[in-house]
Length: 56
Image 1 (cartoon, rainbow, N blue to C red):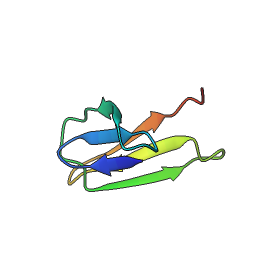
Image 2: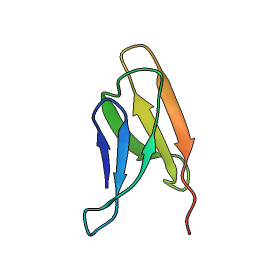
Image 3: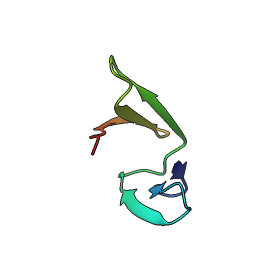
């Protein structure tokens, strides 16, 4: 699960935090896309960031 709250928090299915994605601006919306739906797009007030997600 991904939650945008000042930065992007990443949670495991059991609810434990497993990571964070820092962006220069406060995130407004998170969207998965790309040809394989493995890119996380992070929308802010002034920019759009993309993070390639790796399976594991």
